[in-house]
Image 1 (cartoon, helix red, strand yellow):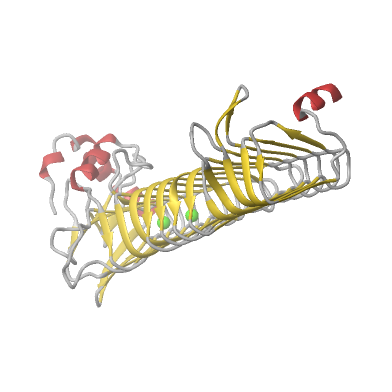
Image 2: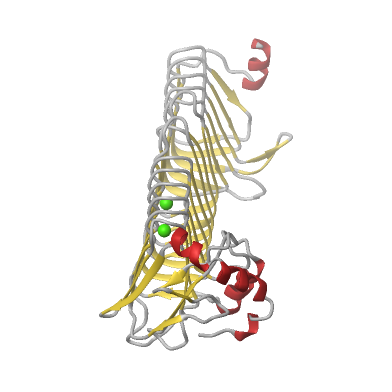
Length: 451
Ligand SMILES: [Ca+2]
Ligand SMILES: [Ca+2]
């Protein structure tokens, strides 16, 4: 694929790149691109390599470019020659598998423009090992290309870019370093896997369809964002942070057929799951230490089976808003925790969970459960068949309003000086048990009085 369109606008940078060819050879080495059977094997060097692989309307045909993504002047060469967008790509046919090893250095790899195909020889598995160094990998179609700083190069890539369809799996290995993986406008029939290695890593997924997703951000600060995604099977995200690093995980606007499982390590965790359907179960867990809070928000989610939210030792916040599930188990560990279960802006009874167990362990904890309740008028009740709230040791507060419990309600204040606050609008049918609460007053007023 030769692109004369950009020759004029890119003349300066191309000339510059040509002049730097000798030093580039020394600095960047030379990327090997070979076909072995039906596999395209791309092997970088331990220097910074920038490679763009573009599919074709003809399934199995791929065009490989060596570019200069960071405008550093060291245009990556392929098989000993320059193949940037002005000079033209290295072309291959009959390819069904991509195997990429970028090795060390701060590398840039992009796969784009692999159209959906019904042909027998359409693209299957893709494996990209980014190796050591601070790397960027991109799959699909982007309005703006993360990691590409040269406007001319960006325009060249955009001119050939398109959605990516893989009928196998896509695997990315980040290795050490600060790595970023972006997926947009992509279809991955089987599993998308990212194992990001040490360093501060980020994985961002948008406007894409997957068989399943399995992301392990491993050590270092961890960021995962998925928006507008549809997944047939399970989504599993693990941010294995240490006590000195943080995890930020956001999943929004989604339809997941299987389980959504998010786990974070010992560090600070901010986990948001908003707007979507989970076909099976939702599981969120953190192992945060006492100094690190976990902040968890579940908002406008329909979970078919169980929801399990577990936090550890920090002062944690768990908000479960406008969502429904069969079984809801929220367990916050030690620390002063707040659990808020609420619905808003509804005029009907909303089933939050058939069975809910809220347990806050030690620490001075607050548990609030309410329907749509404003100024002594309740518009809708938050409904449960069975509801158990146990606040563990130390002085806790349980506040309930606009809530219907049909079968069995149990409130256990545990040891400590605990408050139970009835905000009105509650209906407790069947069995009702309230034990180990010393006072029945407005919790917030009581807390202010303590100050
Ligand atoms: Ca490299
Ligand atoms: Ca890396």
